[in-house]
Length: 143
Image 1 (tube, rainbow, N blue to C red):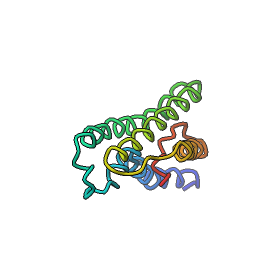
Image 2: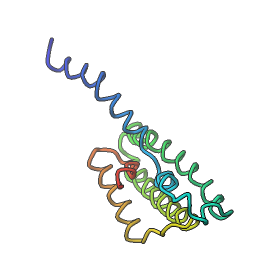
Image 3: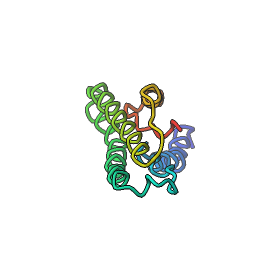
């Protein structure tokens, strides 16, 4: 059996399922913030916190959609949409990080600084570019 054929079989049987699990396990910063909240804090029971918590699902859905949709758009466009997709994903990462900070503050936690948010988004974008993905959907890798 040729080496190329063996590598293709290994890729299909091992690497694709592992990568799929990795992508599915990624979560938005908003969802991670909700998980990390101190539920004993009195602010957690407030109406302001309850309202903020409802926004996490929206960012989780956006994250899941763009994790799979962004690479697909770039491939189908032959790379023409690489920069627009990257820019829009960076914008969505910024919105997710700002929302995560708002959730934290609304529920009695600390706000993220602009520097922290910029570092998170920058790391996610750099990681995405390094692995050949224009989707900084890897922002869950930040923490």
